[in-house]
Length: 180
Image (tube, rainbow, N blue to C red; front, side, top):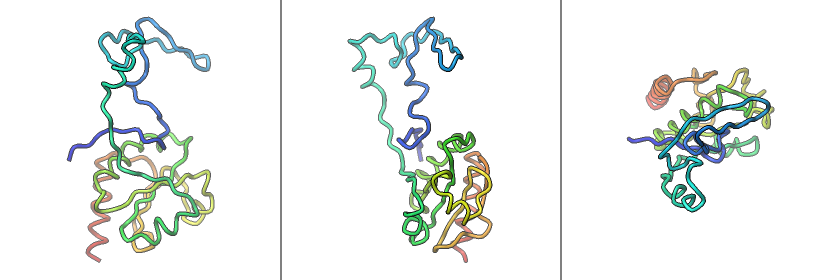
């Protein structure tokens, strides 16, 4: 199955590297640090596109579709996770968490790859302290698989994971929960 990279609106990165304006010899300064860009001749999203070419440049970018990874809160937890008919992978995240940002494309991939096997949701650490305490989440990002309203034994993982490790983790958990 072919996968696509995407930036859902809930992503902490509202842009991709290819959408940044780049012009030869130009610098950007933010918070006292300076970044100097090189040439990007021929790149359709570069600042070298004049105003008359702006619309065609934007139109030439491909449209990407993303599988839905919804962000839920305390009020939705029972309905979305505990009462779900399919297994639910819950990712506990925070905006300020670097490893959580690293996991965004991996979790998006899981949502696309396992669409028929499980549902994926995110819970914001800072906005849902009661859930954090109830499920004893001490490290971020934290992954917990729920099935039939209960936490699957041995499903808890904390910290960033590669796509390969996450696939192994999910395949073994889903296999063990279907044979029990």
